[in-house]
Length: 115
Length: 110
Image (cartoon, rainbow over all chains, first blue to last red; front, side):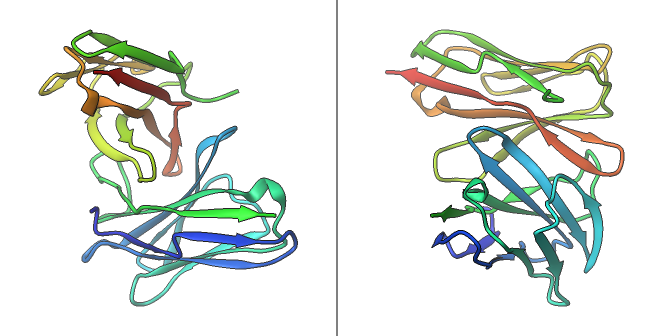
């Protein structure tokens, strides 16, 4: 158990819909990262927040957005869903804002299926 | 084109055998990490290497960072069924962006 929690564990929805994935970081961690893992693209970095502010942006689509709240939990919003958005979505947290010495701890993931 | 190419993509070996997994790129990195991911779980960090030529050992696992900091290898000695999983290398690029490799799926047969 990494100490990072993600809800829900599974999510099944239809194309065109909007969903929200939630992540609670480990106690004391200030950074939250979001990743998408699919069979064809592998594990892709989406976005990072540090203490409520956006810190780094990766391959995140405009239909996707995220935020980190004052209590440091984070939400990833996915809208106008397409079949290709079906994937595992992971959240990770770390103590600091990044860097090679900053260890990321991954949650168990949310499996999103778009039908 | 993937920033970090791993080889082999799949590997199935008998318990007790040795193996090496490679992570290659044309880019130079300030550091590189190796993770292991088991089915239904998130990746778990195994090691971080930051110095060109650095070698780190974690029990039966040996990690090496290339002298030019463009590649890395993971060597497992006397593989055990518990080593089964997806091995991922990852690198931090400018702008604090994390890139993961294409992955190597290892199966160790008892």
